[in-house]
Image 1 (tube, one colour):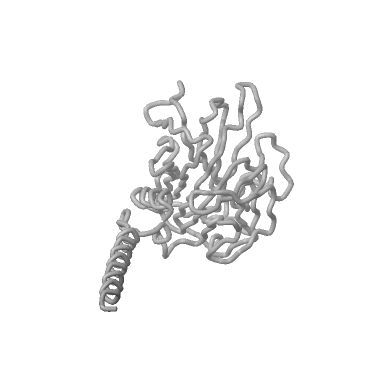
Image 2 (cartoon, helix red, strand yellow):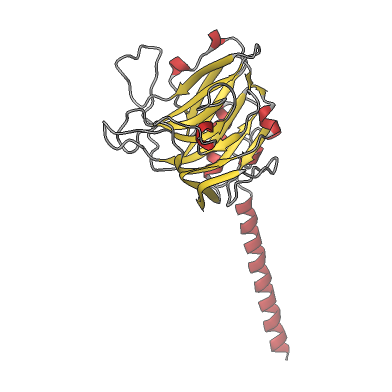
Amino acid sequence: MKTNKILLSAFAMTLAMATLSSCSKSSEEDALPAIGGYNSADEVGATDLVAYWPLNGSGVEAKSSTAPSATVGTTWVSGVKGQGASFNAGFLNYPSIAAINNINGSMTISCWANISNTKATAGGNSTISPLVSFSGGSNSNIGNLCLMGNTHGLISSDSIQVKAEYHFKKPDNTDFNGDCINMIKQESWMDATHTWNANKIGNKWAHIVWVWDAATANTRIYVNGVKISNSAWESRNNNEAMPFSFFTPSHPIIGATPSIADGTNVETWNAALKGKVDEVRVWKKLLTAGDINSLYELELAGR
C-alpha cells in the first residue's frame, strides 16, 4: 500500500510538472512581439477607423453592422485572415454608411486582393478589376473613388497596375478629380519626375493601400508595405490643402464600380471583379508609411 502511494505521488508530481511546462510554453507563444508597437492589425489607427470588412464568411461591415443590400457572384474561401470573398464577376453592394460619408479630410483605404491580368493577348480586350468603390458625384462609372487593378495593355499574367481614381467634392461643391497609379515599367515618355516599380502581384495575395493627405493634396499607393505609386502623379492642387469630402448620397461597393452595381454601365473596360478580396479597412486619417508596413506585417501574420 505504501509503495502504491509513493508511485501515485510521483505520478501526480510528474503530471503537474508537465502541465506547468505546457502552460509556460503556451504563454510564451501567446506573448508575440509587437510589430511597430502594435499587437494586432485592429490597433492600427483604431480611433480613426470608420469601416472594417473582415469578410470572414460574411459581408457584414463590422463597425456599423451594415449588411450588403445586394450580393452577386460571391462565395467564401480561404483568405489572408480566416476567410475572404471570392468574386466571379461579382460584388457586394452596400447601403450608405454615415461614418464614411462624413469623412472630410485625410483618408486611407487598405485591403488584400488576389487578382489576375484580364488581358491575355496584346490585341485583346482588357477590363479593370475593381476592389473598393464609393458611389456619388457626376462620374457614374467611378463615383467618388475607385481603387482597382488595371492591366492597361500589359499582357504578362502577373503584370497588374494598381490605380485609384477619384472625383470628390471640393469646398465649393465642384468636382476635384485625378488618379494615382503605379507604372510597372519605365515608359519612353517618362521624365525624371516619374518613378516606376516592377512589383507584380497577379495571381497571388497582395496588400494594397491608398492614402489621401488632405494637408498637402498628396496621394500615394503602397503594395506589401512599400510605396509603389508614380511620384509624378502623387502631388495635386499645387500641394495646397484639399480635404477629401464625399458627394452624397454615397455608398460603398466591394468588387465593382457604381455603374456596374446599379446596372447602368455601357463601357467595355468596366466589369465586376474576378478575383478575391479580404480585410477591407477605411480610416478618416492618413496612415504613416510605418503604420502601413506594420499593418501589412500584422495581417500577413494573421494578427
